[in-house]
Image (cartoon, rainbow, N blue to C red; front, top):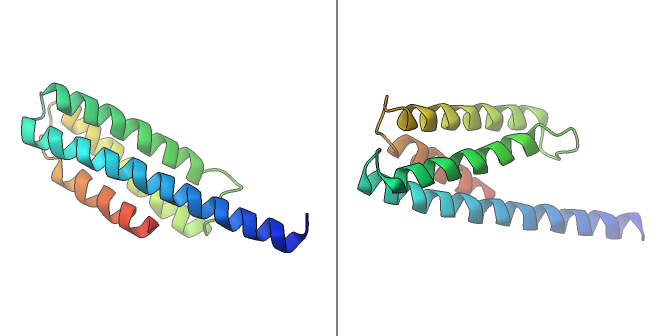
Length: 115
């Protein structure tokens, strides 16, 4: 395989991965919106917060990999955002907050950035 072809396939893989990440974030947003409508102590909230932890833990893990192609500063910034989302989700889960709007807004901004 030529280097040019490898670069093309790698770029395509990154594009596919970004698309998959955007789909996962959109699904998470829908769960969070349903949870917001039902309340922080609802089964929908438990499911949405669990999904939020799963999605953001995967993203943070990927961003921390040495072979991640994003610039180091961008990766660090996105990890910081992800950690904030996880803290906010925990605050809702533990009853210290009932505000899903911040998580929804931030997740949607990241999703839009993947497009």
